[in-house]
Length: 205
Image (cartoon, rainbow, N blue to C red; front, side):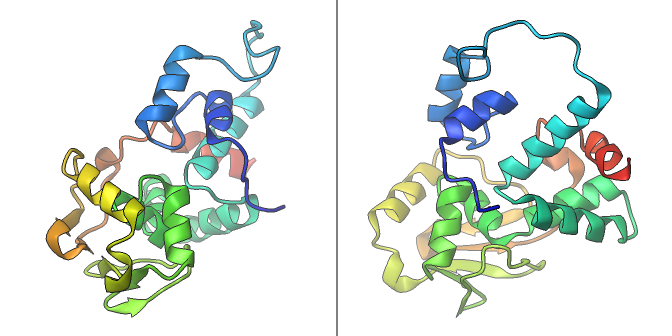
């Protein structure tokens, strides 16, 4: 199954969270806080335990823009790493290059970040990396290629960065279009509307 390329707003309404993490999508959610479609406002009965856990899994995979196979493989890897599985899983998701580019403010959404990476606009420790799932390590320096810094979208995003709160595990130098992944985020750093324990239970069934 290919990557979802439809409306992120409709998908956000379906899941009940702002998957794009943008003000525009949040306005739509505030205006229409129910699922899309003609039956979106109908009252539903109590969801089953399976349904609750499935929806939580869908929320997280769609938040990071991942397909099921890739998402499950990453979860299985997290399950085999010492530590709290849910936290380790979220940290692995946060270390994806497309997500780090988004967190640093070079891109306004993860979808846009994935495009920037794929088109070769992003450097890791001075070398071009065009794989969105590339795993960033502590201390890695992420920057925008010098030839790409004049792009309109990137200029707009860097201007918007002045009004954004940068994630505490990231150090930024906007003047040089550079950021450093300084540490792994703790669970309390991640203000995600997700119960990762439900996802663990979903895959453990």
